[in-house]
Length: 356
Image 1 (cartoon, rainbow, N blue to C red):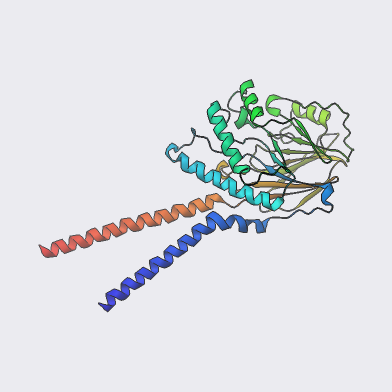
Image 2: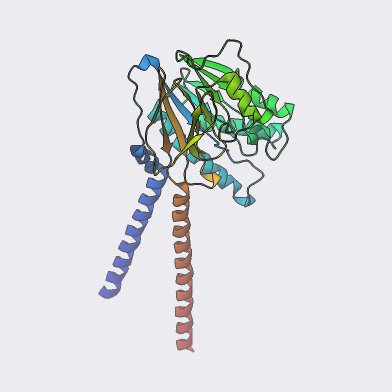
């Protein structure tokens, strides 16, 4: 009798410890890992705050739609988990940067280009809830760009209606000025080059011109890109679409001999450049969503002070790793239940054989 009690007590203690470990693991993965991940980020400092602009860059969040998930029956869970991950990682990045300007570089929705008007407005509501729900500030300037998954252009046609409803949801001009920075939107999807009335001088470092495009420009040279470079002569460009990060620079006048520097979690650092001296820079921002098939996900962080640029990527934790851990935990519990049922069946069968 004492032996059975001791055995039962040990088993109870084992399951209690196992339960506490699993609970701690879940709490860490769902709450604390996002905070502890910020310890790996580089903080970019300003020398003179009034002449300094902090920029947070969000690329390709592609919030999940209602219709195109492969396993349609788990769509509600996929939406909940993806939205929560974006909300958590963005909030940590926002609080870390304390930005003056937040730039969303397109592909805000995954199914925006195919959505009905009702679905589109529902996606906009979710998008605002994720990114503006707990970080809205009247001081921060927000800039929104469309991507091919928002208005079409890659695997569906662009229509005036799609462009009109996006512009209605994010009503703002193509040129946006902040301090000494002039942001201008470049819509390569519709081959639209911004119109700027004043004469542009590349070596004018008092007013820096920053091009914003969803689709990369120098990374994919074309006649359209040549026109943009000659007409707008940007000092710096922020782009997205490729779901990875890199920095491209070239001579502002010759526009040749492109130098490409990949940015990954392994080689991440603070990149520093002087704008307006000779080269034009294009910085590709990685996707913010873990659903894009890559572990290299994060947010761009740039600081521009006078004509000096600092840039780094705030890499997010791997949600794929967390989901794999959950899968193995559930698999182990399932196997344990199966073995427990089989053991009871075998025991019951033996008892029955002894009786008869």
